[in-house]
Length: 241
Image (cartoon, rainbow, N blue to C red; front, side):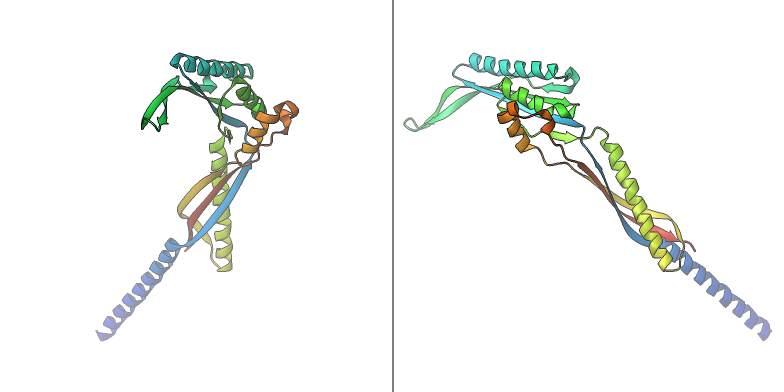
């Protein structure tokens, strides 16, 4: 009887130990290893967004409106002549506001006229023509020219490629650590990813040169630089049990 009891106890201990070892192995596989992955994709921009505006200040509202509308019309005509389609042009309606100055003697604001403004944004699909658009804006009388925003029209594809490469980098890191530890890498447990874009420096200097020296510079002198799509992620891989 006692012998039977001890055999049963021993068997139970062996089963418990085996279950514990299996649980430990399973827990180790589940906890796995956390690694980082990084990658970047560099592409040349092939599009630009140019935002310009005209402001006209005159003593009479009608005169201010006509001056602003005339400059806007000249630029829109030039932009279309350069190949910009209507779908690529956004234009605000004319905004008219009174202008004041401070009268020190009377200690109050005195109206001196009116200010009219029109804002126009153009999507330029032929990046090499950007200097021509800048020149057209200057010649049309646009008084405000924002630094052009350069971008690539397949931005999502480039960003996804950066994420794919970052995941491959993370797996390679995990495989190297697993091999050094004498283990075999399993599947992915979790991934925490983030991406970012770094645009080239806005061509402020080029824009000023386009306004002041366009007559003596060729459009081919424009240099856009690269857009960098970066991806960083943290991935956890399981070990094979």
